[in-house]
Length: 292
Length: 270
Image 1: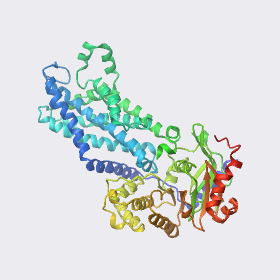
Image 2: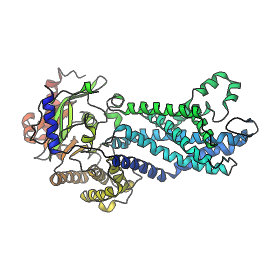
Image 3: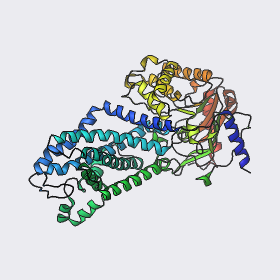
Image 4: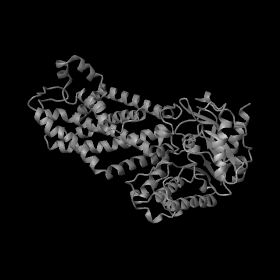
């Protein structure tokens, strides 16, 4: 019974307005546009690029140099010889760049939501999952730029990976960037008080960074504290670091890749659900006052 | 979520009749226990200037959030040119242009960059987007500012850029959420005039949320929203009759202030 008026309405709308089909080229344009905007914003904020680069370099030049003699790193895969601490720590610092980037873009999304740019994004007719994915891809492009700039400078600091490594690390960077970006995206949808970057550093970035294999190999952690070792094992960031470390030396760490890919998919799905209008998470948290 | 399909509309449009620019029917929305919208129904005919008049906190922004699908309406239906925003979001959103209450331009990007970005979100390629941006800027009298950073514009100019942006994908329905807030009297009048010219030229339907009565003209349609409910809908003359008042301001007050006592009991509002 309810079918009839429904079809009548559809017929009426079809008669006056052609049905909308979003062509594939439109998807490509849409994603390109989102990446383009991110790139423009990035170029406009030179300070952001500089600070994103200085941060890991400080770790490399000062922290790693200081700890060079304290922490001896024995031969562990993927390394084939004894290595300097700087060499060990470099992949972790690349992952740190991505961690900062993922969270920074999530912060900018919270900011975007406040100033309304997120709403402009979400009134696009393209599916919401696609818009969020595009936003992630744009963030990854920016973080790739930073990661390679860091690796280039590190090269002159005797952190020299085999040349092929700089190519094989690319997919690893993209995958780990996707995971960390998706994590940031999920956080941006769940928390409304993220604008305080200091608290994000305290509660997310530093714990994730320190309880991973970025600064010290896991066997060393295991020697000193077993609980900490298990925490490291359950930290997805550990696997992002290892994936990048192996890839930088032309090797594929299948287990890490699986963990990172799995986490990326899980975070992404959760973020899409959180941003889905029918799931109502935005509606429950939002209200007109929140969206202003 | 097909099992949550909204009930069939009470007044389906006849097949030979074009659907209105916007048809909202029986929409209720609550944040927790607070009902922001309570059984709201309203229509924006094509080519009309419909003022959504309501004091602060009336539910205007919530209604806009539902129409733009920031979140879904759980009850009732919202149709843009006959397309239900929940069932056919792509069709509905592609025919919809929005100017939000908050400023939503990238201040550090140029006017042109802002417009082109928006066009790409609607699948319009860069080349075509630039041409349309110039056209849209021309129509709001800002063609000479295309290369300027948005930061360099005045508040009124930013609003006009936002309107130009909302027109980039040639929508048939334009929503404006208190667009004149924070503007001086001159810019306010210019903006209203600009939108009216657009209606005359393009025939698009406009839903203009405001609490400023001076922005309303004799030929407009008015929807009075107060505490999440539609208190009156019709021409200014009908509003005067409904409010039993000599002018719009007192009619508005009568409908939102004095009329409240008689209407809220039974509404379940706190």
